[in-house]
Image 1 (tube, rainbow, N blue to C red):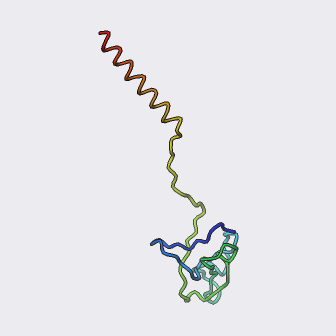
Image 2: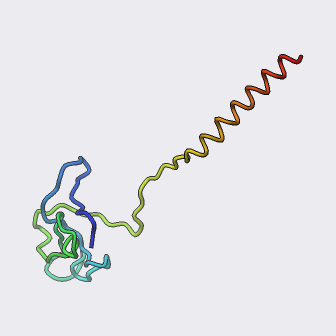
Length: 111
């Protein structure tokens, strides 16, 4: 199951509809219900964009000519992450800079 539905489009609008998935709830292909399959009467698995249970990817089977949006699946789902320095890193950097400035001033006065 999902914590939140996958119901936001690439344009950041909410999608509340059925979507082509071509996969069963565990993410594996469904055989003849895959999208673009070469067998059977041209049916494929669809899901519900607002669902958080197994029906988000496998709610039923429909004719492939039906007007559903498309969910795209990837073997690896990644999210960008930006490393943020911890406050102690900034403290160490600040103390070092102050120390270097003091050392430079002392060196200049003694010369």
